[in-house]
Image (cartoon, rainbow, N blue to C red; front, side, top):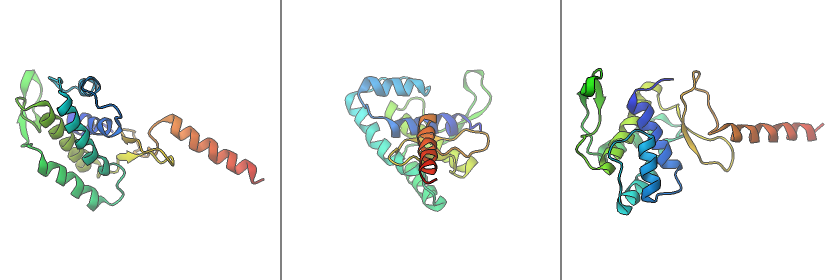
Length: 173
């Protein structure tokens, strides 16, 4: 499934923040750059702000109750400085922006991730904001598969579950 820049990139950045284990300024800057954020330099304090923000993003992923998931996303939107507007900058087609380009990097990351999760909720009902089904794995993901039936964060987790199921069937014979 193709999401726009926010539903795809913003939601993907949200997943990356939730999954991150290293919140050093260098690691955060690399993550923000990878997800096409501009002016990604962060201080140690800003990196810690994004760590706290990641904890706020986490419950959205894999929430089975759509009403709860909607409330979680709306709560995120409530605390951002986001005010959506349409832009056609740099010769691009008109598209929605959720942040001011003049805002600091933490505000832009918060606005982008909250907006991305809101777009993913709006276009896919939140079902594509998943959490790995393998017991013991808490990795989150944005399901961009065609059929929207992804259950695992990676092939490695899917293989572990499938091999364990196969072995369990083989021992009962």
